[in-house]
Length: 254
Ligand SMILES: NC(=O)c1ccc[n+]([C@@H]2O[C@H](COP(=O)([O-])OP(=O)(O)OC[C@H]3O[C@@H](n4cnc5c(N)ncnc54)[C@H](OP(=O)(O)O)[C@@H]3O)[C@@H](O)[C@H]2O)c1
Image 1 (cartoon, helix red, strand yellow):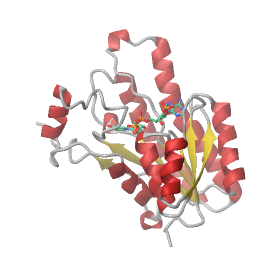
Image 2 (cartoon, rainbow, N blue to C red; image 1 turned 180 degrees about the vertical axis):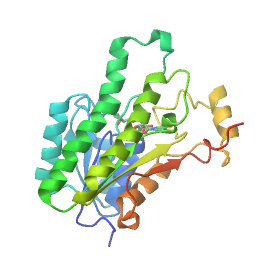
Image 3 (spheres, rainbow, N blue to C red; image 1 turned 90 degrees about the vertical axis):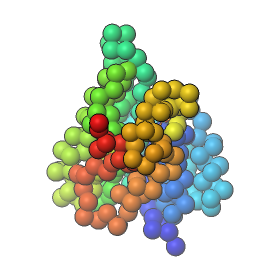
Image 4 (cartoon, helix red, strand yellow; image 1 turned 135 degrees about the vertical axis):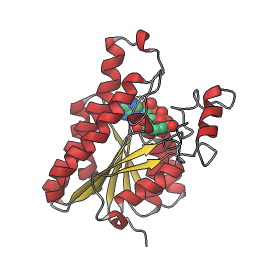
């Protein structure tokens, strides 16, 4: 018996990286997982991994930059899965660019996917959970970039800090509906998003490994476990919190 048996979870940006690892973890523990992907994305690898692990899942399409698509997706999850208990708002972009090269179009794209997209999927999911009348739990994936600046990630950092405070604000109004909402702040996790920065030959990789007390970067599965914990009943009195998953990087300033 899994701790998420009978529950339905939506994971955004679940076709690769941390979203994929989380979708597989939740399904392995019994949840039926709605695997979100963009219209241009392919959910097959995630669906295959879940099937191999003996879990259940179905794909749901939406571009997080398109509020109407996101609203329709949340309805689809509940219609196809029968209910909606958990949301992991994970999808984001992080194009590395100098601040002087960032256009307004760049700014809008990063903000609209990362921050507005989080607002839309979180609030629509909460409305759905309230309508279904059973409470729920939400985890938003922020970043250590909510806490520290980075030269080529200026707008990204701002969106991640926005997500962090959005979680705290929404916790104050979701509580009465028995919906918990928390935030994950990952550090250096090896995925497609970070592979340029964390390339073994890059000075940034050496910097992250040396500053991190645990002495290494992490795998996406090392975020999936903490996310599963925050969704689970083991975290039943935890809301509005942030969980750092950074190997100690932030605290080790020199
Ligand atoms: N990797 C790290 O070191 C690190 C550190 C701190 C925080 N994070 C956070 O962790 C989360 C996952 O990142 P990751 O490292 O797993 O990155 P990733 O491998 O690049 O995955 C990002 C996911 O988001 C999806 N996505 C991007 N734009 C989207 C949109 N408009 N609509 C729907 N989905 C969209 C991507 O879909 P496509 O495949 O279609 O692009 C992909 O599935 C992000 O919130 C990121 O900010 C990562």
